[in-house]
Length: 183
Image (cartoon, rainbow, N blue to C red):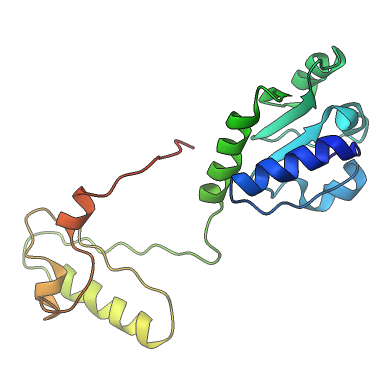
């Protein structure tokens, strides 16, 4: 959210470097419909006071952004707005690129559901039931992930007769790596 064309150009460049598409708003009135649901909100120094006057709700992952030297009022407005950080460009550019990239991982998938099947003891049929539910879900067109977290079980690929079917198995996951954003 900024009305400063130079700041907007810099933020669009940084968002592209972070692989993120952005919604741009020139002021709090234009930003209000998307403000609470956005995974990350950047407020230009030029709009910080206007956000406070518009009484936008406090929210996590809000950052006030401006070029160095930043006006002292930005620091004074950060706490009342609930901004987590004040980022000064160009020094904060790498940090902002990381924030844009991490905002992609924070968006929850639409209509995602989790169903857990727990057996009371070995041989209760939890794996068979979980397999049946997953097969039924796939047949109805739902995107499905079947995961067996029982360290003592034989594995769902054996239960379903899929030992020869290509797919990801636990040994392949032990080799996986990458950054994990704690939130």
